Image (cartoon, rainbow, N blue to C red; front, side, top):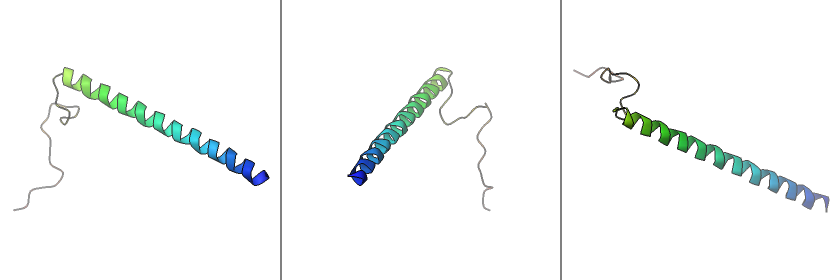
Length: 63
């Protein structure tokens, strides 16, 4: 009986942990969407970043 109770406790803990992870993921998604919407309202493209400088490539071009 003791093992069954431990199993029930662990199961409840895992369910609570999964719910917490879902809430965090949802909060991040909402914040990202709000940030992207604010950037669009400011007239910037989502891929432009925080400056008005053109994007530099990560590697130099090959000859």
